Image (cartoon, rainbow, N blue to C red; front, side, top):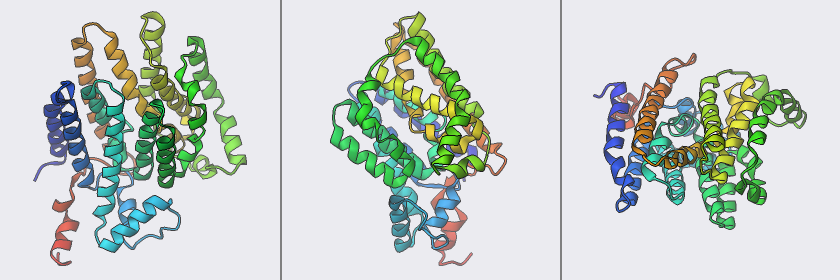
Amino acid sequence: MLTVSGYYVGFMALLVAILPLAANERTRMVGAWLVGGLCLAFMALRYDAGYDYFSYRQMATWQVDLSFLEPAPAALARMARAWGEPQLFFIITAILYVSCFVSALVMSRRNLAWCLLFFVCLPLIYLSAFGFVKQHVAIALFMLAMACLERGMRLPALVLMLVGTSFHYTLALYLPLLVIYPLLRRAYPFWLYLGLLPLCFVAGPLAKSILSALGLYAHYFEDFSGGGEKLYVIYLLICLGTLVLWKHFRLSLDPWAFNLMFIGVALYTLFITYGEHVARASYYFLPFAIFVICDVIEHFRDKLLPSLISGVLMMALFFMSLKVAAGNQDHDFLNNYEFYFLSDEALVVGNGGQS
């Protein structure tokens, strides 16, 4: 059997082998769906990988009351119970997550090889979806909704947002984007972006008071969990680095992608002092960093060096995520990965319950 690290090394080796297909204009779609299939299989077949993995597994058995769940994950959990196979919950959510996310990447018309690599390697995206399943399915639907909205497809965007809300109610907070989206197409003055970030940091207590007074997510503020600072720094550096390139090196900035990423960084700044549970409100917007980094690479006439540097950094971030998981104070939530059909639980079920 593969060692724990072997699963991830094997996954990354296959990813690197397939990505050149996505970089070639003639084979980009073949590469995209091969990478998508790889990511889907690796996610769908996981066992004991993801921060809340066993919480979801209990939901998909008869061990937990589902009345507190949003309607879509509750329906999937009941389906898994009816079939007597809890892994079905993870298979269906993996299909939804990867297919929606890869579709959004394809619709962006950027270099697909870069997009797919950043999707897998950037923190709080692919590997994070192993654990926070409900929210990340909602995030993938949000990504696809924004891709539709960018193309003027407002009705599909609304439907996707509503379906996403049925997976995680927090997405409802961002439904107004369907109305104010023209504001996101504009590039604003450099000083405005730069000034809003420290303002958000100072305004954190005010935001807490308003949300608590409204009775919204007050328990998240009371249940301080800490964490998330290192991941915040990564996205803050991406944001500030892009602003510097735009201001001083005439970077051709896509306002749509940058503004959406900036909202995520601003929300992260607003809530980071209250821990990662509260800062998860920003997770819907952070994946737009994928498009921003692609645009930065496109800025360079000779793309070989920035591509190599980005590739090395992405690999480092991928394995850094595994290291962070290993050092988690509660439990190592990624490095115990194994295929479900090779796990002790599957073998016991296959033997009719005889261990």
